[in-house]
Every structure is written in C-alpha cells, then in structure tokens.
Amino acid sequence: MSEQPLSDVKCTVRVASPLRSYTGGASTVDADGATLSDVLADLDRRFPGIRFRMIDEQDRIRRHIRLFVNTREANALSEPVAVSDTVHLICALSGG
Amino acid sequence: MSLSRAEQARYQRHLSLQEIGVAGQEKLKAAHVLVVGAGGLGSPATLYLAAAGVGTLGVVDCDRVEVSNLQRQILFDSASVSRPKAEAARARLAALNPEIHVVAHAVELRAANVREIVRAYDVVLDGTDRLTTRYLVNDACVLERKPLVAAAIHRFEGQAMTYVPGRGPCYRCLFADAIEGMVPNCAEAGVLGVLPGVMGAIQATEAIKLITGVGTPLIGRLLAYDALDMRTDEFSFQRRTDCAVCGDRPTITELRDAAPACMSAEEIRHLSPAGLRELLGNPARDSLLIVDVREPHEFAFGHLPGSLNIPVGQIEHRLQEIPSALARTGALTPVFLCRSGARSMAACAIAARGGIRSIAHLDGGLLAWQAECDETFEVA
Image (cartoon, rainbow over all chains, first blue to last red; front, top):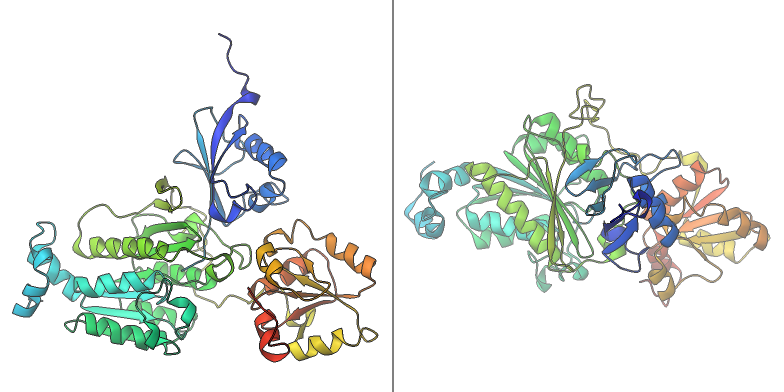
C-alpha cells in the first residue's frame, strides 16, 4: 500500500465560536495540509477570509488567537500536522 | 478561625468531605475572594462562593441591572432592574448566607484603583465582559502576586484558566493582547443563558480548591467548553519568557488605562446623533458614507438607508471597499457606526491605520440614534 502524499493529508479542525460564521456554523471541519500553514490555506480556499482573522499580513499568528495541534501549543505556522491530528483554532473571548 | 454551631450546621456537607472537613471550611471562612463583574459568570460564582462560606466576598461592578441581564444573571430578579448591580448582589448574597461579609465595590476598575482593591483579597475571579478590564485584572494580579481564575464566554463556548504566581503562565501568556472589536462580546453575538452558569461554577470550584489546597487547579491549562457539541477540550500552555507582564523582562511594571482606540482625538470627527442627522439632511455641506460595522443579522434587522455593511471583524480585510464606495457614491466622509459605539471605534482605528482619512464616528451608536433622533428605528 502506498503512503499517502503529505499534501493530501486530511486532519480535523475544531473551529472557535467567533470563527464559525465563516464555516456556516460548523464546529468541526476537515482540512488538507502537512503543516499548519497548509491547513490554514486550505481552510481559506473553502471559507474565504477565515485565515486573515487568525494570521496578520506578516504571517504572524494574531495575538488574540492560539493554535493547538491536539493538545500541543503551536507557535509557528511550520508546525507539522498529521492525518490523525486535530487542529484547534482558539480565539480569546470577551463575554462575561 | 473556628466555626460556630450555626456554621457547623450550615456547612455539614462540606465537613463530611474528607478533602475539606473542618480545616478546609475554616480556611474558606478566613478567605477573601474578589469577583470582578456581577454578570453571567459572576452570578453563579458569587452565589456558590457565598453558599460555600467564603468569609469575605468582594463584588466589583459599576453597572445597573438591565432586564436583558435576567436571562443569565441569576443573582438578580425582576425587582432588581435599574438597581446598581454591586448593591443588588450584596443584598442577595447576604440573604443567602448571613454568616459571611459581602463588600460591594460599585466602581469601574481602573489603573488607579485596581491594585489597591485586588491587594485586599486572596483570590480573584475575573468575569468581566470588557477586554481592557480583563487585561487590567490579569496584570494587577501578576503585579500583586494574587491567584486569578479567569473565564470568558461567547455564544455556546466557554473558556477557563487559573493563574497562580510563580506556578504557571498568566492570561497574557495565553492571549498576549486583544483588540476590542476583533473579539465580539455577548451583546453583539448573543450567549446561551446557562453557559455562564457552567463556567462561573467552574471558577467557584477553582477558587475553593485554591483556598483549601485540594485537587489540581487549571494552572497552565486552558479548559474549553462547547455547549452545542457538549464537549470539553484541554490545552496545555507555557509561561512565555517574553510575556509583557510575567515574562523575564516585563514591560508592564505599572498599570495604565488602555486608550479607547489606537488613534488620537484629532484624527476622528465625533458626531452626535443630532449632528449626523443634520449632515445627512444637508449633503452639500458634507456627503457621508455610512459604514455599519455590525454583524449581518443585526444589519438585516434594521439599518440607516444607504449604509455599507462591513462587520468589524472583516474591516481590515475589506478596507478597500470603503474608498470604492466613496468614489461610487461621491461621498467624502465615511461615518462608522455600530450598536453602541464600541465596535465602530475599533473600526475607526483599523481604518485609520489602513490609510483611510477624514473619518467620522457616530458616538453612542444606533442606540443613541434611536433615543435621540428616531424612536421608531429598531436596533437588534
């Protein structure tokens, strides 16, 4: 059995509540990508504008956003993502 | 601090718990806990802490009870509407447990008073609905070396984390900064009434654990709760050595009040509702393009004629639509507005940073417009 090419890896993405307006309300979506950068690019193709809510013009993760791969902190977009991984898009919330 | 017979009877179920017992209950009685915000989170948190016998409970809130609070703020009832929240909370909590001392702080937390207030307490719970206050409280707790249990909510999602000085990361290590407007609040986005009940109860639980020294607090762990999917997730995060307040070389060593927006007063023209009405009726003087930065569902509910709708979260991305619309309509001045004026101020700052000039702002938002200019105008 041939190994799945990295670029076709599908992972699960959990979408923070403030970003669900982009995913039609879906809390969980699939995405392709071998790195966080690829995953976010794939999300943006399907849900235009969602990446910009998380990543600024200098390709930095915005300061009110945190990305986790499974339970692991991801501080760089080069973070690898595997097929069984869940990427969590976490957004600071302000409600009380 | 020993327990009276009345207290022994009241806290019997705690005394039966090996983990709490008499010693733990006495620690609760001796404890001073501050709850910032008597809202959705503060309601269950204060009720449970009062019931649990926390000896001194401080409540900070400078707002008054509104009827729309009652869907989730279970500290209050219909008779509380229009009363100052801190006072109404004090009365309710004192009625629940006359054995404890409740302190009402009916003040707005500012750089000038937050450290002094926090200093008098052993544990702080943050249940505010303002981002600037959230960071102010975090920074004050770091500087005063006080444990903090922070929680926040949005629609059906909640988050909680605990900071203990010297033992783990603070709230800024998790979210270094946030701009008002990029993060929607409950008034804009809505919230399931029972959601803060869950998260506020978690905050009270953490406070009781910290005071009695039992269990494992949420230090360095973010607890995320999704009520729709009924799932919790937990994420580990580390103290950041470059954290502005608890890092190795902190830049926040004394507190300052956050500027309302990242632009100077000279750069923005503030319009009252009457001022806006006058200009709208006199396009020869200045032709306006109204940029309504509320969410689409709010916009659909009712908006001023000819408004361009760009939700505040999308302003940065869709900034070029503003000069295009100005050119198309021949207008000269974009006027940013929203429901109450907070999101539109953030939008003004983003637009100014993006090079848009001659910006105007409707102070008080469409609620002020409704109150002063058009009672029939409906605001979502």
